[in-house]
Image 1 (cartoon, helix red, strand yellow):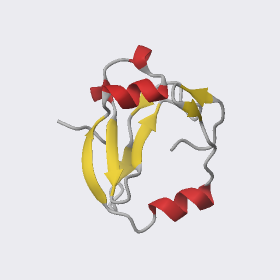
Image 2: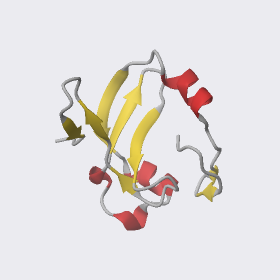
Image 3: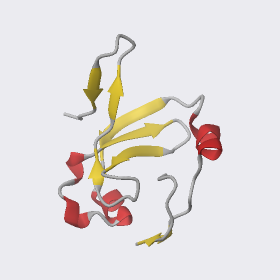
Image 4: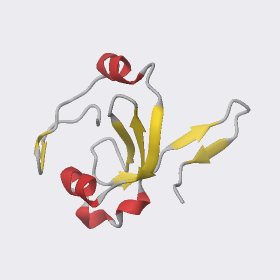
Length: 96
């Protein structure tokens, strides 16, 4: 679910998703799996040229939503997800 962007990809049009809708499907969910992107997910995004699927972490939520990083807001390639602890320590995600 990339937001907001339009256009198309291998399996059909990319639908813009904006903050209220994203909140509706993410808030209250739990993370049930953390893994690398699959070759099929890479293909669907059109990122075959961008390197191995293992470069991007996927968070699978309890409702089936998959969240993953993008190189930019236009979805030009896979990326990493960064975060911050409550104490203010920055980190990035990496699946071993």
